[in-house]
Amino acid sequence: MIKAQHLRAYALLIVTTLCWGLNAIISRLAVGEISPMQLVTFRWLGVVLLLLVFARRQIIIDWPVLRRHLPFLFLMGSCGFTAFNALFYVAGHYTGAINIGILQGSIPIFVLLGSLLILRHPISVIQGVGVIVTLLGVVIVASRGNPGELAALAVNRGDLLMLIACFFYAAYSIGLTRRPNVSALALFAIMGTVAWLVSLPLVAVETWQQGWTPPSAMGWFLVMLVTLLPSFVAQISFIHGVALIGPGRAGVFVNLVPVFASIMAVIFLQEVFELYHALALALVLGGIWLSEIGKTRHA
Image 1: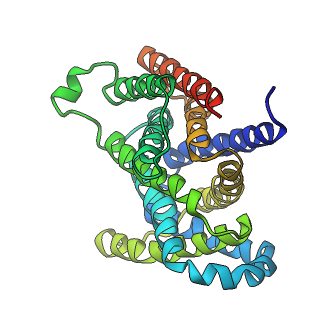
Image 2: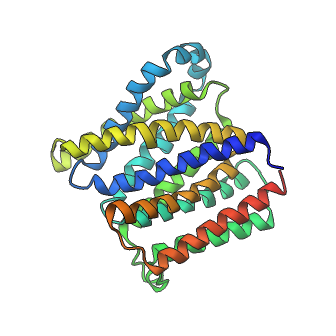
């Protein structure tokens, strides 16, 4: 019998991954409409403004605890929000939304291994098999169905940037297990503020290198969309989901991102869903199933 707490977590994490799948589409739509660092900066500025409205009272209540953990929260916001998003949107200039979505399946690999090495959480044999199966899917999409490309170091730049981004988000996911005992809104408000502040030097460097081109009308619409869904709704849902069932199990749900991203990429971007995408997607979803079985039996 699945516990009610688990069902609630699953619902939250499905909403999270649906929003993140949309984020892969936004990363491609943003090309030519708004620069990557502008999108990161305006995204988190929008989140900060929203949270000043919805979380102001909770921040005041939790501030004594939050203040004691500011260095930790600075690291969390920098890794999980700024670094991940910056690499994510740059990757959108070099690879397709389907690839971006599928490669996010590497996050659970980093989460499970990090949980083992840092938190000393054991990994069952079934979970280990699930990690390997997922890794095979990532290898297939990164090599576009031709493993010889990996041997020849011919991996697409965008795919490589996405894998690095996933490492940062996995570190953030593991760090959530050490979160201070405060409300999810107050926690997110501080980390979101950090993400915005850390993004300012990045957009300054981008402007210095490329000049400042104002976002188009579509660019501003994408900022609004990414602020409300992948940023606000998804992050709050993910924080609650991790709190309910832990980072390892929650991290595996990130593998649903390829499903949503692939469907939306075909519908909205007219991207071609190749045979190797189908094989990679099947392996990634198989990794979810195996990892969930392994966790359930050891819960």
